[in-house]
Amino acid sequence: MKVKINNKDVETSVSNLQALATEMNLPEQGVAIAIDNNMIPRAGWAEKQLHEGDNIVIIKAACGG
Amino acid sequence: MLQFISHYNKQYDYLDSIRLALQGGCRWIQLRVKHASDDEVRPMALQALKMCRETGATFIIDDRVGLVQELQADGVHLGKNDMPIAEARKILGDDFIIGGTANTFEDVVAHYEASANYIGCGPFRFTTTKENLSPVLGLDGYRDIITKMKNHNIDIPVVAIGGITESDIPSVMQTGVSGIALSGEVLNAENPVEKMKKLLRIINNE
Image (tube, rainbow over all chains, first blue to last red; front, side, top):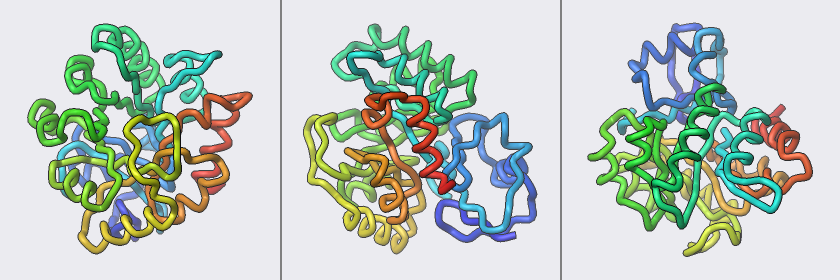
């Protein structure tokens, strides 16, 4: 499925936000994620299903993609 | 994405403002208290951190790198007259979010290269909240900066800030920014909680 992460098209096979965070090796601390402009607290990542075309914004500590 | 910046008025103090924002559903808080020492701000910051942890909100403190590290907040926001971003990164390491205030694309590049994780970009229009005001950006200013960022492959989120009101939100979001930072617009509403809910619905396009 194709999603947008920080304005870039990204292909992913995972189905929820927690899996995406794991796939991207996001750290335990210093990460904030919004889907379609809606901030998702970390406790809700596992149950947050991803959908084709989701606009995901990730703010994370440490630079680069 | 909506970042609420703590504020006060005759009716509410800084902590009230954060509590109301969280009650309204905001999940990104910046504690901004100017003209006070870290010792004065610490008790407030601890309380704000607790409220943010209870709701799963991201908690950023303006300017105070030492407090961010001591209290293990999620990150720090650095304005133009605060500590340079590169210096803050040296102190904080890679586990903290650092946001930087930018007025131009050149600022954005400098912040990105200094390892900023998001940009607070503004002011959108004239505002009395911030001292040392930079030139206003307007919609064209944001479009221009976002386009240049894409061309230069700078992919950190941009949050628009500075005098944005409810009716501005759709057009500002359409410029390609990732979010909006607000303070007075929420707190000065008749019912700040309902106002926040409404603003979030607008930002989320619901």
